[in-house]
Image (cartoon, rainbow, N blue to C red):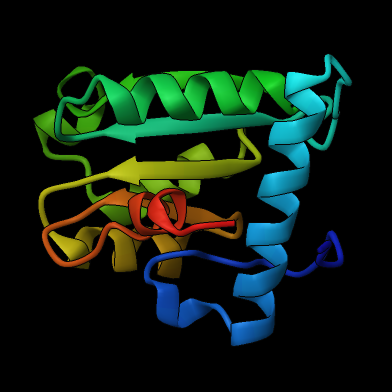
Length: 146
């Protein structure tokens, strides 16, 4: 499954995906896992940098995203909320506009789902929900059988 490079797609809830897209994601994930098991590299993110914007701490979510991005040929940039200007009063909208100049996508783990919506509305790059108070779509996808 590939979207045109000019087309922005966010994943804030599973409702952002059609049934066909969901099935395609699960098939692709199964194939990529098998390729990894067999030592076959897959480089879907060459030259891409993904910001991991975490308001809430996590071990598994952070590690799984960082490892997955690396396996896909990209790089990640971990950005703890408290170390950004967000902790000093910069708005989420301003942060989204700054990040879109430097990175190719934002993966965000936040306390309030409205924060994700605001990021997505203000960034011209994809925003992925790594956890909010309302949804955890990546965890659900990971828990689904192939």
